[in-house]
Image (cartoon, rainbow, N blue to C red; front, top):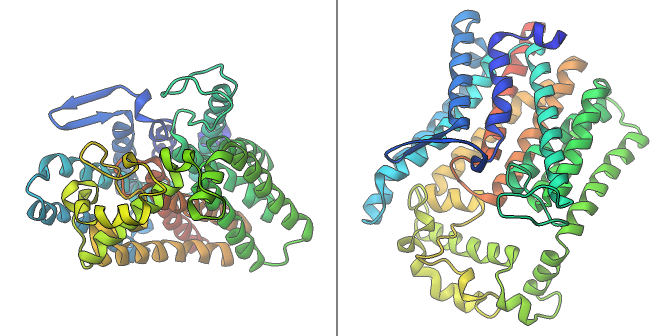
Length: 442
């Protein structure tokens, strides 16, 4: 209760938005007006943005002013994404400008969480209540995942007990959000402090990543563990016990996740030729094998449109992928069934964030995105290395959020409304807020 009393009104609005932002659209009411479809997430983001603006008017805009390069790069990337609708339509006469402008607007809407978080969460008291909201909502999502796992609760695709579970998020978003909660435990393990928050986030997050069994999220927490250890090491020695505990947590989560994906792992080994191929591998769509196939097509699209790509979401349309289907079938036809290949009936998309940025927005888009990530990481790393212990702890958490979100982005794609996008933008905004707190404390 003390944390709630000390937090600013803007921070409380953003905190209350967490359960709505990190909730699958299937479980939300919708309001449709023409091609515009709004759900609770959209209204929660609108409230958070308005609260951030109100905070800026009341308390000033310094959290934004200190990171001008981040906001310039973010604006440039979003402008390129929206503008690409123009050349997508010029390239493909069947491309719907109106519907794709709506989806591009939703992608931009999620990105507004970055400046909103920078303004609303400028004080440690504001961020404390926000971190608790993430940990507690992760606990709720994980509890739902456990109930789905034991067969006591249906998911939106039916009842699938003793399998990977989506909770009320979807497997990849569940894994990403759980990884964010797990970062709370990583930070406390490495730097100490906030033990209760760490236990709630660690148990809920670790079990959530295992239940989601999303390999991109699993890879994200492994990279996060190494990165946070390295950052903590710049502040002083990290003992062997803490290092082993960190590695042990990652190993336990990995064992749980991989045990639920044993069939997929074996199928991918057969796809790579490590194990002998069989009818099950070549006769059924195999997740990771298909991702390699779709990534190949996305790379070909980029190589033929290297500067600015084919435009927002055009890479999933027949006009973009048809020229490369014959070559893809020559390469992958023996190991993937016909339905694994993109078609007018199955517009699978690239399903890899980096390759889709290249295919849709070209080298310009990828350079802007990489520059944005680097610019966003700079203040986070600076605070983690040079800030006082409390701020350094927060910087480790935020770094983990960003890294896990980016890892899941590479395993999903450039898609409007994905929850890991919200996680990425919130982390970028929190990085600016932390740098503002450090500047004020100097």
